[in-house]
Length: 161
Image (cartoon, rainbow, N blue to C red; front, side):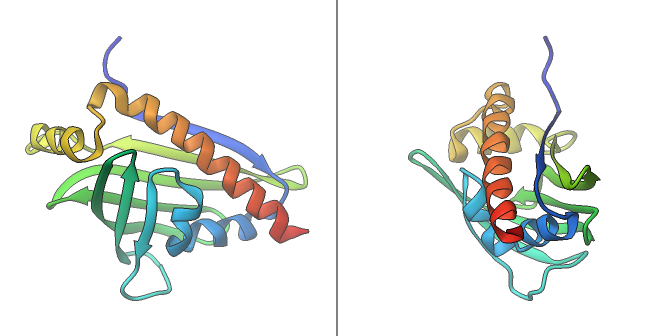
């Protein structure tokens, strides 16, 4: 089997799309949801299309920072951002929100952007700083996305109660 370049996980949350969106789009809280992200610094809140930020990450003994830029911020519909390191593109993360029954289907997406010029260096940096080579990244992300969605779902349900 070849390398997998994207991934998608979803969960149905007992809350309105706007409620779930507000939780996800508050990037400073991303450390509450993600098992790798420890925090996010947003120099000019509130977050909107084009906003830049810095992510602080940790997995086991590995610690690294990323820079990011929000590419889509549509309340109750979509929140997407790209992350990179040292000017090299790494990944696109996204969240889609769709009403389903009395709740919301939240879909988290990941796309590997380590292609083209600089891809090998970006892969090497990921292995050295994050401790995850491209072959393992999909499994690490799948587990992380499931944890993230479960945490978001619990917080959204509590916020709606």
